Amino acid sequence: MGTVSDMGGLAFAGLIFLSLLATDIQGQEFGDAQLVYEWTSLEFDWPSEKHRNESLGNGTYVPNRNMVAGIKVYKDSVFVTIPRWFWTSGHPVTLAKVVTVRGEEKLSAYPTWAAQIQGDCNALQYVQGMEIDPNTGLMYVIDTGRVGDKLNLCPAKLVVFDLNTNSQHKKYELPTIVASYTSNFMNDIVLDYVGGKARFAYISDANDAHLIVVDLTTGKSWKIQHESMGIESKHAEMVTINNITYTISVALDGLAMSPDFKYLYYCSLAGFNLYQIPTSSLRTGKTDGIRLIGSKVSQSGGIGYGSKFLYYGALGLNAVYYWDSDKDMADQNVGMDKVTLATEKLLVRNDSTMQWPDTFGFDTRGWIWFVSNRLQVFREAKGLPQDGNDAYMRVWKVYVNETGYLYQSARRTEGTSLEQEGNGSESCFSYTLKTFFFHLFAMFIGAVLVIPEMTHS
Image (cartoon, rainbow, N blue to C red; front, top):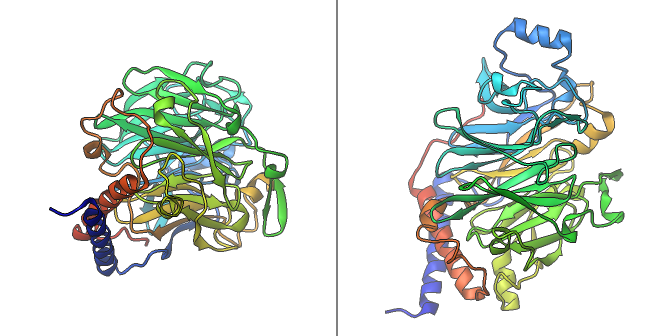
C-alpha cells in the first residue's frame, strides 16, 4: 500500500493528466477569455409590441436606466439580474434569462412577467444577487423589497425557483430586525451544504453592514455583525479607474464559500481586506474565528470560490485576480485556518472592455463567467450614456479548468451533520489532498462528458 505522500503525488499527477486531457478535448488553455454577450442598451422579450410601447409611454420602461449586474449559469441557460437602483421607476424586469430572438440577444422576464410587477409583494421588487445550485436546479434569489433605495414596498425575502419547472419552489420572508424594511441592501448570496443538501444561505447586506443567515430547513433567520463588515476607511472608498477617482461608499459586498463548506470569505467594496469566518460560527449566530486573510490588490465587488481558487474582481485595475491558497499553505506550512493572502495572480485584464468586473458564476465545463458593466460611469451619469457608440455591458467567460464550490456538493457532504461539522485546524497537506481529489473528480467529469459548448449567435 502506498504512503500518504504517495497518495498526494498520485493525486497531483492525476490532476495534471486530467487537466491536460480536458484542455486537449476542449481546445482551451487556462485564462482564455471569450466575450459571450455585449449590449449598448438592454432589450426585453416583450409579450407584444403593444406592451413595450405602453411601457415606454407610461415610464415603466426607460431604456437607459436598465443595466445587467448579476449573472449565473445553469446547463445551457444564462440568468442575469437588472437591479432597480437609483430610480423608483423605469425597470420593467429585475430577473431575466438571456434568449435569442431572431438573431438578437434579449432578456426574457424570469420566471414570468407577473413575477416582475413593482408594488406586488408576491412578485420580485429588487434583485441584485442570486445563486444556482447545480445539484438540484434550484435558484436562490434575494429580493430587498425596496426600489431606488428609497421606495420601501415589501418585506425583504429569499425566493427559491425551480429551474427545471420554471416555478416558485419556496419563499422565506425576512423579519425587519434581520433585513430592515427601510434600509436593507441585500447584495450577494452563497449556500452552505450539510448532510447532502443546502442547509443555510448567507447573504451580504451592503447598506446595514452585516451578514444575514437563513436556515433553509427551519426557515429561521438571524444577522451577524462585526466591525470587519463595514467601510474600511475614507481612502478605501476612493476607487480609481483609468485615472478617474470615484467615491463609492459600500460596505459588506462580496461573499465566497470554500469548497469544503468550512469557511465563508467576505469583503467590503469600500475596502481592500479579505476576511474569513468559520461556518460553524455562522450556523450558531456567532462571530468566533473571524480573521483577516490579507489585503487584495484592489477593491472588489464580487468574489467567488471554485473547486481550487478564490476569484475576485480588481476594480481599480479593470481585472480579475485569483488567490492560490494551496501555494500559500505550502509556503507557510499552515492550514486554511491560518494561511494568509500572499499569492495573488492575474487572470484577465482589459482597461476598456473589462471595467467593473463583478459577480461570478461557474458552469460545469471549466469556465468562470462574469459581468463588466462600467457601473462607476453608470452611477455618475445617472444612467447609460446616450451616444450608443460602445457596449457598456459585457458578459465574459474565462477558462479556468475548474468548477464552482457547489459542484457535486450533495455527494461530497453526504453523512455530515451540524454536530460533526467543525472548523478545527486542518493541516496544509490534508486540505490540499482533499482539494486535489475534488478537483480531479470535477475535471474528470468535465473531460469525459464532451457536451457541445453554448454558442453565441
